[in-house]
Image 1 (cartoon, rainbow, N blue to C red):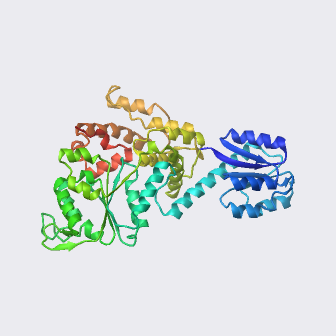
Image 2 (spheres, rainbow, N blue to C red):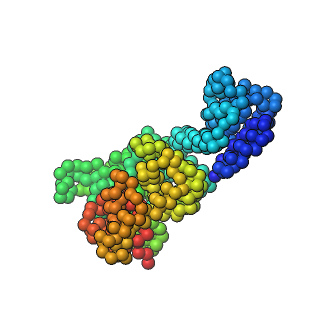
Amino acid sequence: MTRRALLVEDDASIATVITAALEAEAFSVDRCDSVAGRDRLLAHGEYDVMLTDVVLTDGDGIATLGEVHRAYPGMPVIILSAQNTLDTAVRATDTGAFEYFPKPFDLEELVRAACQAAASRESAEADRDEVGEGLPLIGRSQAMQDVYRMITRVLRNDLTVLILGESGTGKELVAEAIHQLGARKAGPFVAVNSAAIPRELIESELFGHEKGAFTGAVNRAIGKFEQAHGGTLFLDEIGDMPPEAQTRLLRALQSGRIRRVGGREEISIDVRIIAATNRDLAPMIAAGTFREDLYYRLNVVPIRLPPLRERAGDIEPLTRHFLRRAADEGLPLRGLSRQAAVLLEEQPWRGNVRELRNFVFRAALLTREEEIDAATVRQLLSDRSAPDPSGGGDFAGALAAWLGRAPVPPGTLYHGALAAFERPLFEHALRETGGNQLRAAQLLGINRNTLRKRLDDLEIDPEGFSRRG
């Protein structure tokens, strides 16, 4: 993404030098030498930063900056001046200028300030977007604009929504946005991950149970449907719901009533249903593993979330957003070079936004510089490649080879090595079980929820290992 700069400077030689330096940093520069020219360009364009001299061909460049700030409040201004007096410095500060440079100035410092000013504007705009729209979603690509339009169409009604998209694309965020901005925002938002609940407990989880309904049911329990009464029930990973639970879910959606497991009383429910899946339900319907009538009941308004590879233009603002969130969670606040952003945009991001977020948090932790540059991104991308214990002798030898590839930042050795050697184990288990997470957890000898958490942390998509007929 090219940044735009407005340079207001009446010295042609200085303007030429500054323009060349800014263009070398991927700025598009418009030039003028007067207050009138400045106002004309501002009226017809949007700029990420303005650099202005004080003495111009038709007047004082500072005198009217108050009007400029009021008309273009998000645009940072850098003031240049050959009048190196205290009065000029004070006047520049009073205008709310981003930076003040007396002439002669260090060109490299000036360009660095322009880059920081433009980045601060982008950061402020992203923050305003999140707060102003109330959406926990980021992206200005055409693909995301289509998603936003679909969201707005379902805010003032209770139509059932089916969100389709790969793992890590943010399906729950879309569901939360529909709830938070819709008519039911005063009610509860209850999320259920169908894939994370043991098969024998999913009906109890959804509909609740009476005391004594089964072994271990020592008390009555309220299910997710009742918990979501008056609000929204989000059924995530609906494609992983077992057939018997699908039948009871369909009955509840058709009648608007539920019955707790082991109970006789029917209970009226008032909930909006939003479902989501990363699976292609059509072949599952053909195979008889997903009910066709339930599919049509859920698929009233489908919203398809694009994978990150289809919205590469959103990667830089997403990265800057995650860098700010990382800082909110106690990690160092890092900048991002344009070259690093370009490199990130070239990656496939098979784990989508979730994978990008984890990568950015890791970069914020491990880099020693104030700005994440392209070299840092390349290093971290290469570090993601897990060692192959089967391809290089014994396990200890593979570990030694991994450790010898690059210096390991202090405080990261244990977790880095553990993550690198966990990956091939989990991938092997998923290959052996065709992507079935329950069987993979049993093969590994760990809890299914633990497996799901580690798959998320390692950015492994189990869908990539599923066996499709």
